[in-house]
Image 1 (cartoon, rainbow, N blue to C red):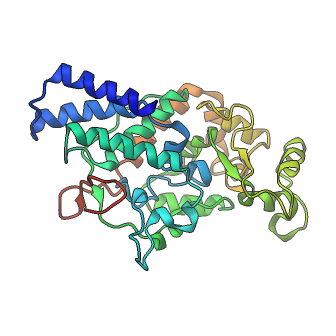
Image 2: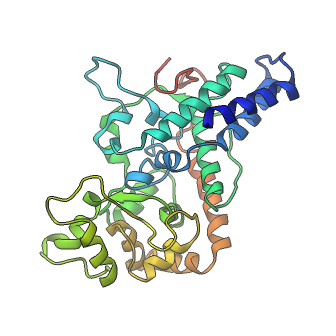
Image 3: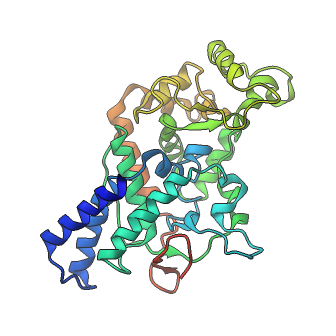
Length: 325
């Protein structure tokens, strides 16, 4: 179904543009435009998994903060002793649908614009389109990235926020990438959609910081519901819970109101409301959806420029997004 829709777009592109596409600036503009329309058909939840912060559905913040270079798409070479990012332990729960969608989009783009549009640009465009399709803002994505030449699982862990990261640790991590405290709070709003597996928050339910008691910052009703789904031992490892318990499939600003109501799923989420450095930002964004949308678009633009690769010395334009050239 998805591929047939993309095929129709390819055929329409042929009729509108003709068949004499050449590898020059005109072709590049056409290809970028075609990529934008193609990625509008992307598998939403799978794409967002590879683009936003913290765990499961929003894991790879800015492609692991290493830069927007599609390194997360690289698979480990058969027989290699060095694991690629995609196969890192922290990435094993990423949904295959997201990877498949990017690969299919890349195949279609390559059929019309070989060697022009990078996997990194396709991934960035698809993430933007998902945000918009889920009810969020539509923002311009700068193009022209090249794909990164380095993808190592060993570099994943220290570039990721953790489910129990303190606000100070999050600020330190974001600051190391040139992002501000406001960027941290705004981009954390991506948790207005998505889900996390029990293993990332079960400690809050039964033994918070070694106290043998639940985290006191969890609303009792949410605590009861989460305990029913996530027992302390012997639970189903596939069970997930939504980051946003009120509107889990809608990109809105309810995430922030949830934090004020003690309905944050992860300790790192709820901590944003508890810490005086970030609490005022949570409150402001929770009161004004338009303000959140504008700030989110600006922060995504800023984040999309982290570690951008340009030229053959530092990058490549992969034909197969899962394999280095």
